Image 1 (spheres, protein in one colour):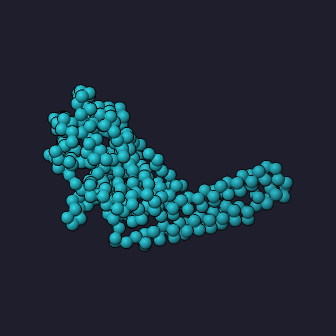
Image 2: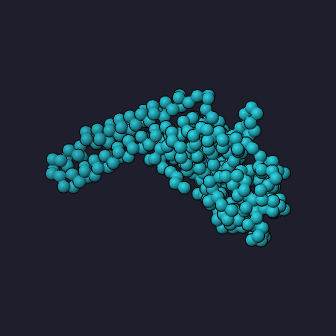
Image 3: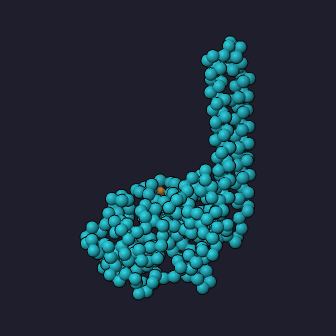
Length: 309
Ligand code: CUA
């Protein structure tokens, strides 16, 4: 899976703005670095007149006070113009998605609309290309920061508040995101994917996400292990009696790109590995390791979860 996770490879208009500003700053900083290095060199090897000129009060006033004042003010004004335009351009027609920062994963909700039921997923959101998306960011306990470098800037997720970020993907693709505020424990393993799809594909995907899990289950044995092991105390599988809210909604977990917030690939083996060894894979995460399950039970459980497409 080829994914982009870089401020310098923008996949949308907001990230393009940030990339332009970044290049201006890199360019300016490089020019100033060489300018200062040149002056330092002149101070060492230059003649007496040159040294006196560099050390004069007038030179220091213009080079050390006026120059930074003018360049930094110009950069600030230009930056405000670039980013300010983005806020004005956004409208009430944006698509709304709610994302909650959990310890240490992302709860993603597509609100119910009309007849369509709410869809809940985790560690992945899909969006239509070309459409403005407004993401409502919250957190139940600690501060996280929502950051998809190739699509937009960072916005903190603060308990008791709803912050908003608007973004738009210009091209289909898979864009990696990362929690950008230290939130304890396995903060570094709190990543996610934004998948930008053509609008028709996106609608198909969302329709499917709104549906409950297949009934009867495709993997009956694994479903038995799921309930007998008490997985339903923490996880929801819509359409079954699993209604736990502590961990991610697993209704369509088999269709996601990754497991454990972009830590593992999404395969039946990875599910088994995760369920048994999750404290080794992602230390201090909130899920207990299920070392008591036999290899046969783990394989059945893995096959069941993978079948939840
Ligand atoms: Cu969540 Cu860092």
